[in-house]
Length: 349
Image 1: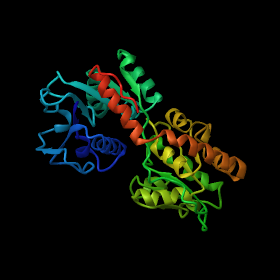
Image 2: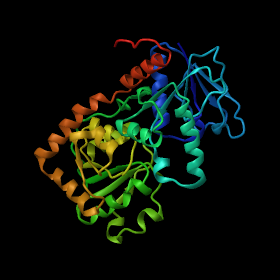
Image 3: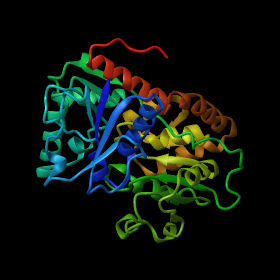
Image 4: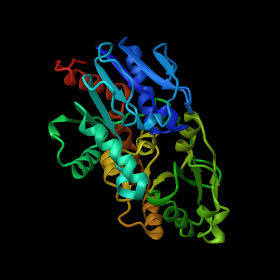
């Protein structure tokens, strides 16, 4: 079995969950000594995991929207990092579907172009991977013509960098931790305003760019100085914050999976979330779920963790549950999907 990975995502994003997903797949393929090629382009914004199997090609005009050049006589499986089809349609095609953010939250030409390409990739696939049951449900909602038997749900993994490090919570001012983008459906404002009711807490943000005027302008001036941005940090530094934080607050209304939630669970950090189907699927009983997107309700959710017994039970269940989110397991199952596409039997491991 020889696999062609179309590395177009490395030309699209500087960093993100999709590139992490494919970096871990490359690591698995290298460890399995599989025959594969990851093709990237000379306009790439980031490099994939270092590999002797990387081939860099010149980028054509509008490369990300064009069919990928490939010869089916050289490869058995085509797996694009971002919803492209191969020029040679005889090759077996696998697509990973991460979410339907565009379909839920965008409009106009941008949504049309994205969805047209994405739906074409899904419809032309021999096998489809969804990263959660919630994402599969969305797929069948937007594309009811898809044969459900072609879909495999394979959860994302979590880096081994995240773990309890047996340090006490921060000796300074206790803090809530917010990870990732802050706009729109991420509902940053709801959590930020909860500081009005959590007088002893500050809020530390990681990633998502520097705090902007729009992030802070609608917040009472009395809490603005209790909101900090820690920048873009290494996994080790984020793990340290997970271990020091009172909890991770993750108020997003929509996710395909919610990797920070699984990271926090693996690090022994309790998590307070909103009613988000995929996140609740991932975190299950380890989560403290806030019923409504309201700052007072978020504060009440955080306050539940003041109860030491309740807090320890959430941490304990999160540590147990996080063991199922393992990148090696994720991509062993991905190799099985490749075998299914080729009509081969699954491996045993």
